[in-house]
Image (cartoon, rainbow, N blue to C red; front, side, top):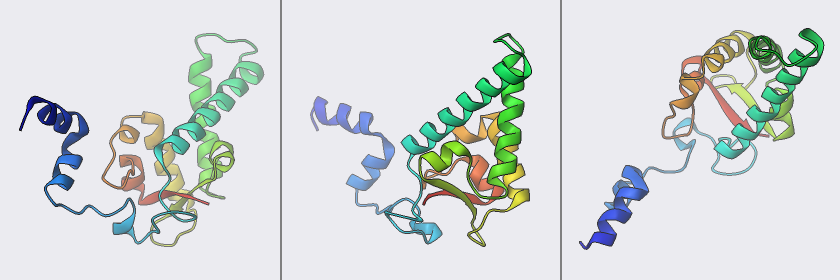
Length: 155
């Protein structure tokens, strides 16, 4: 193996090296019984981040204009509270926030395939902590989704 191959395998990560060795990981969501593409498939990271950005921007706008009447240091605390409330109320009842709806995403319970208020509450609380959302499994599900037994899918 020359230097380029060694650097290339290091840059592509352990998954690429394992796949090159013959390990078959399947597609994202296969272990959960979800389709590979289209409606019902696992939401891709770009869409998820876009939806999160829209929801956070809405929360900051609401906090800065309706609660604090300007952007101050406490606005971000209020924005987090608005984000949490919006997430609990919308994800737990209809399965999506305004940002998720805009990007064509929905959060569902793994067992029933429908939104669940208690799972929405747990998922939202863990999402506000932020660290669980940064730890993903091979299907692209964050730790907040795994602990709440939910999955974010395309609609």
